Length: 90
Image (tube, rainbow, N blue to C red):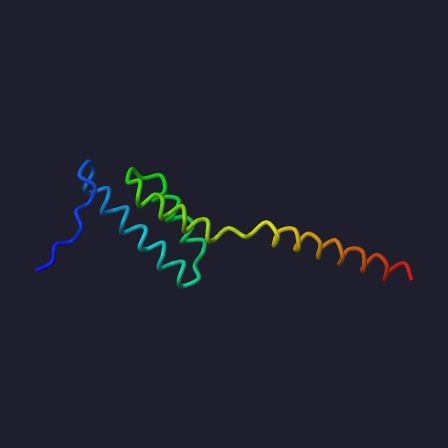
């Protein structure tokens, strides 16, 4: 018989709850439901268990777009505006 890892002894019910929420967040992320995954991960991140909170932070970091993506999106939008204005002028 194998014993499951003991939850945080200070708040055992909170630790189990945080683990469950983190698993739900990871499952939502895997299914592509990023809104739900973000909401659940933020809930877990505010919890007391440092290890689970760190894993939630890592999940949130995976969902943030890289800065280069934001820059390229802005650049593409500006190019669209320029081409549209140029087309209307001619």
